[in-house]
Length: 419
Ligand SMILES: Nc1nc2c(ncn2[C@@H]2O[C@H](COP(=O)(O)OP(=O)(O)OP(=O)(O)O)[C@@H](O)[C@H]2O)c(=O)[nH]1
Ligand SMILES: [Mg+2]
Image (tube, rainbow, N blue to C red; front, side, top):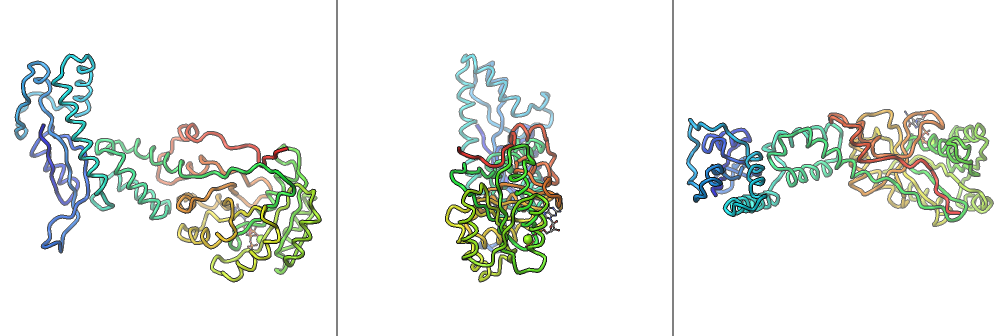
């Protein structure tokens, strides 16, 4: 069986070169990026290398059982209509299925081995470049448009090069469906631990103005007012934001409306006391002061104060969906000392680009618990679910029914109690 390897500076030139030489019997199996030209390694340019096999005239093999003919350049006047590789393969498979033709079995095995060898070589040496297949380039553009991190985008590019043959890449719809599925699989949903003892303490930390106080009020309504249809828990709100004029007023106002008690604390000792006095409360929700992720000293001071909550307290990090991916990565890193268990993504209603959030969380292996999508308390909050992130991806043709099937149902209950 004849193999070929051809190189050219562009994808289309390479295909044309192969077609000229072998006609429609050329089956391009793999392609990779290579450096071409130059002197002593200098001034070389990126190009593309394609390898594959030239089909035999399988009709003759099966009927006459002769040795395969030598492959000649494609005759211009081939009377048989060109047959594509997949059709030929299917036809051969159907005939070997009956195990009547050992010659065909041998040919097929050879095709498989060659394809596998070339594919393995390709996977090891491929790299990102302008010489990629147009479908790969298009996917990269869509990911960039959605502000996915460079790291995340390169992972997807590598995976496509490894898992998609040149033939598969021609079907862009199937490719994008697969990429959307991969993106969905990369979203980790936070699984709440079952509550074992009271009080459960949840503190919300995060940068300034992302919606921490509003989110705390929404959580208080979900858990403390029976708003979701479940029986209400006893909830207490605590704010450590006692210094800024208007800040404690904001949370007290929410507390008043929902008839949920609010405590303002100034230091470690006061926080310790509030927690000790509320030992039988189901849930203590702590609103904190927004801090720039770069204010390392202030963050450390706030962390020291919050240590009064004890080791069983849960921290959750609020991040606005409108933040660009590089900033989200930094926020996730700077808040690491709090040991936050999940990320709450706020202001989802203000953007259609969610690649920033999805990729930054995936790059740092963080899970998402809630999303908020509006200013209204309590209704604009829900448990995070994969479909909500995927349906808003810009540039992808989203098949909603399919992704709902792939990533079914969100959890309805908000807190799991182990009685
Ligand atoms: N569009 C939109 N706005 C929101 C959302 N959540 C909060 N906001 C608004 O964002 C602004 C800031 O909200 P806060 O809850 O005060 O933010 P914060 O994080 O507590 O702010 P600091 O305490 O100053 O750090 C307010 O105008 C909220 O109404 C949301 O999900 N969507
Ligand atoms: Mg606040």
